[in-house]
Amino acid sequence: RDTPSFCSKWNINPFDYDLLLLPVNLNSTHWAFLAVSMREILVQGGNSMKGSLRRLFLILLRWLRLEAIKAGKQFVEKDWVYEDVAVP
Image (cartoon, rainbow, N blue to C red; front, top):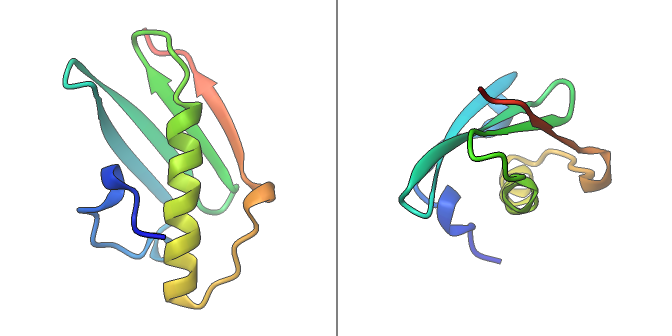
C-alpha cells in the first residue's frame, strides 16, 4: 500500500531513532502528539481535547510496516502497544 497521508512528507527511517515525537494536526483545529518509542515498542498519544488517537496509531503502524520493509527490518505489528496519555 501507499504511505498513509499524514506520514507522506516524513523522509526518515524511523528505525534509526530510539524515540520519535510526532506532532499531529487534527482537523485543522488543534494539535496533538504521538510519542513513538522504538525500543519499548510503545506509542503514546496525547490530545488536549480528550479524544483517543488510537485511529492514528493504527495508521502509524501501517507506515512503520512499510518503512520496516524498506529498511529490511522485522516488524511484528501485534507486539506494539498504544496508550492514551493525559494532557492538561
